[in-house]
Image (tube, rainbow, N blue to C red; front, side):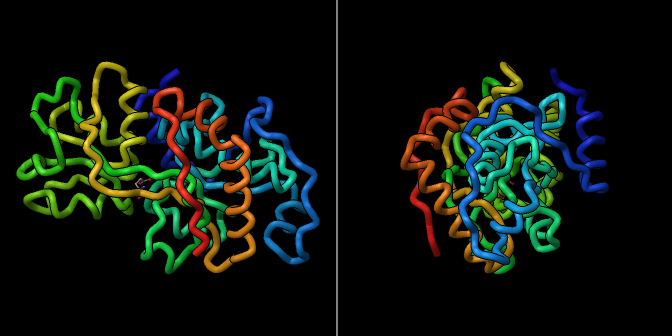
Length: 290
Ligand code: GLU
């Protein structure tokens, strides 16, 4: 089922303003929920395990990584990463409080304690590391372009954007990275979610949408026959799991969880049941324990 754009936008806006959360469905967990280890007293892990619930920020409108289903529960690889970490804390998937985070509010939501984790196609970079900490990376994407099916404007790489308009999202690395490739700052139309860029692309108000290749691939797959990815990535976007600055024990716990999943095949399994339905299965990147 697809909701009309107006409904999706209104729901997203309401969720952002009110901080609404959605509880997960009762479908079988992807990974076994464990009896939690004896976590150090006072640690974030102990607090979450004792509470029996966790709040995770993710995207709600990005197919393959985080797309809210008709019950409002996000589905995709990012959502699976969240369930994996919750399971290691002994938390059932239906005890995850999912909060929609758009690109611009990921750092503030972590800083304000509105979420325990952000798993939201979230690139690890030095500027963000000044205000939040990252576990991972658990995937490496690259920025690319989405154009109309058949590529009527003949855009074969980012260098062909000069003099054209492009849509992206405020607060994203995509917005920063595209700046050198446009003639004027006003050629970049920045909105709050990538799905909001699709109508301007359909209408010809912009020649392309730019962000990570896997987000664009999900949008192309969701709108079959309408769009295509140029497939000339021009950046590296290592996806991390955002958490409170300098919560080193929690970061190490999440890193250990990711490493175990990469080593025992769980990572592949979770990829294949989500993003892997459309994208090839890559080798996961090495964890950066900075
Ligand atoms: N991965 C990039 C970022 O974190 C672009 C995708 C997004 O906005 O979620 O900014």
